[in-house]
Amino acid sequence: MAGDPIEKLRIKLINDPNTHPVLKEDFLFSLTQFKALIEFAKVQTKTENSPYFNRNLADVLKNYDDIAEIAYQYKIHEQYQHSYTYDPESFTTSCMLYIPIKINNVPILAFVDSGAEKSILSSDFLEGLKLDKMLDKRFVGQARGVGTGNITGRLHHVMFTFDNEFLPHSLTVLESLGSAVLIGLDFMRKYKCIIDFNTNSFKITGLDVELKFLNEGQVERYSNKILTEEEFNEIISSDDSKGKKRIQDEQKVDDAELKKVKTRESAELSKEQEKTNDAFEVNEQHVKQLVELGFDKTKIIEALTLTNNDLDKAAELLLTL
Image 1 (cartoon, rainbow, N blue to C red):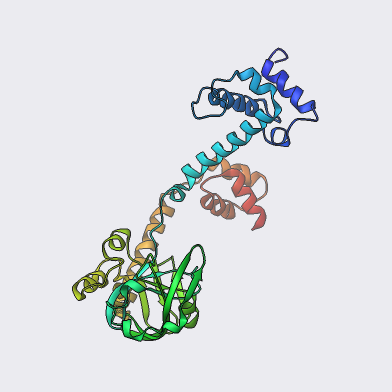
Image 2: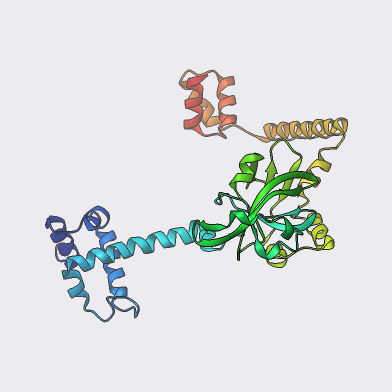
């Protein structure tokens, strides 16, 4: 090992006060880890889009700034591999949260955005929703957030329909909004709404409202347009939107019948447990060893049964009995 040049370099870097902390903290404590870094550096000198392409590996390793930068690239690559393996969802796009509602009794998809301060309507849909004559143009201005947009006015009283519940609210009208209508924090706070990712649904506290968020295909097909009644009903009746109704129907099962089912399952489980206990044989050698230690034989058999003949675990269990 004394003649290993990589080991010599590692020792040199450990003892050098100018060595970058990232090397000392993450790579120099282990020869294996340091060799992995060297191999990574070698790959960088052969990779065309790398800043170290075609450079001599020895020259790279002599430059403390270069090797520190490669160490960071190595850590980034490790994190990428870990994330790709254990969190692959982070590399895909998330479907935005859309629900089917009616505005002024006209069916449309609404984008639920908890990051938006106000609920917004795109000016392109004023006429289609029959609201163009009710726009208060005294409220023109500019909206600022991630980007900017021109406010063309405000609708003070708009009727929203959520699953047959009628809720009035105001809307700020914006030019060239990416979605037809956006439900913001003002609406969600006012009506105590819940975005429930466990059930993938939008709920309104105190009301019998639970709308399933649409899947990606439905969003692509139906967003940013005025819906026909047929299209709206198709969305409402789809598998992704009728989950609540299905749950409610299932809850109507007769209580007496449900009790019978539970009783039958309990009896079957008891029989299975009895069969398992009858088929199980304790290790007689373990029994003898534990008896010699002074434990009660009945408790020994019970402990070995519970621990599946694990002598050490059975002994620990007997000490607590």
